[in-house]
Length: 141
Image (cartoon, rainbow, N blue to C red; front, side, top):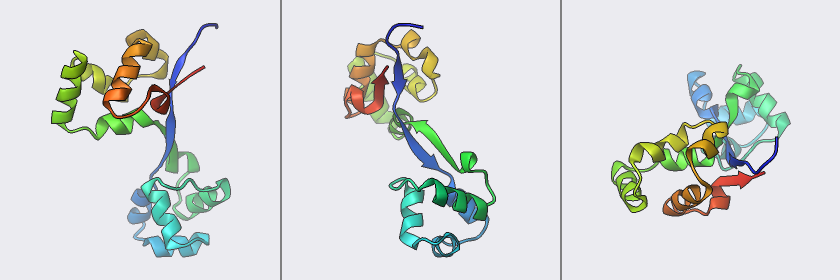
């Protein structure tokens, strides 16, 4: 398979808070059970800290949830698009002369369809309107 492809850059997200709350554990209690501070649990839940594999498995064991269900990768653009207000989405769509559904589709589209649905310059324009560069949200391979 030749040619240039474009992929979404991804971040690691977690369901730690959701699972911890289901088990009625505080951040402090979970931290004590896995050997880290409350602050570490807070930063993991907030998405500001990616735990080591050892810590991820410890958390997984305590929360009785498979590691791949607890931690997952998600396109950065999905967060950015989903955090837009209706007004912001409308303004971006008008500026780009594009309908809002097309922009929203970036939070749902399969990577394999990305270049079939969007041209590189369109992706760059959308990234810019979201306050990012093309390279912040996408990668070429």
